[in-house]
Image 1 (cartoon, rainbow, N blue to C red):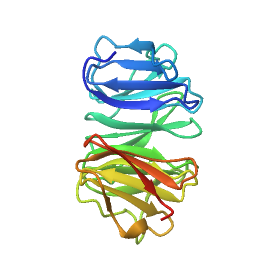
Image 2: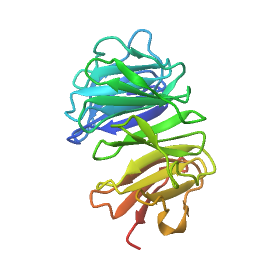
Image 3: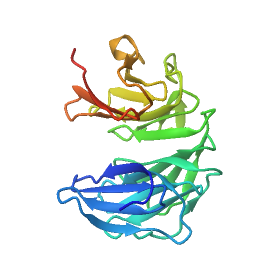
Length: 252
């Protein structure tokens, strides 16, 4: 297995496999049912892995590394496909593939959100707006909106079709008092959950920017690193550095 901290893991679209990456610079794929390693790969001049994202078909894994690159790997062998994508000027902390598999976004310490053609790896540009490193980027279920968060404590929304940041009376979304580390859209795409280094969990109504439940929810002792809605959108799970997972009932 890994020989160092694991920084990220992702389930495959069919939930039969899990990909993981971390400080040992290796990408590994595991069988969920058996708990066995199916494949692994560590390029000769690899750097630590910060984030992973599967393509919707499950054939490719996009990898964000500390060496300022995004790379594409075969999910069955973990082998790298083609050359790394270059453009960022600092470590890349997050990567996400659109629900349609046509574009990939990445963000990192250079404050920019980069858009890539998923097939060719050619950059479609860099979107500016954050004033600190970007730690997380997520597509909405429709693929029309990208949500990003980072060290500037802001949650920013981007319109994919117009290639512009959504700015109105409630966006960007303010509330966190420390870095935003995780984001998740509800299955219907009308809500967005966030968690951060301020130990809070928040759920936002995207139509109004209002926070559900009157604001922040506090139950963790340390930074929140993961949030996830269930398939119904009625429950939310949050995971923290305090070694706990909390389940929130959104109907109460």
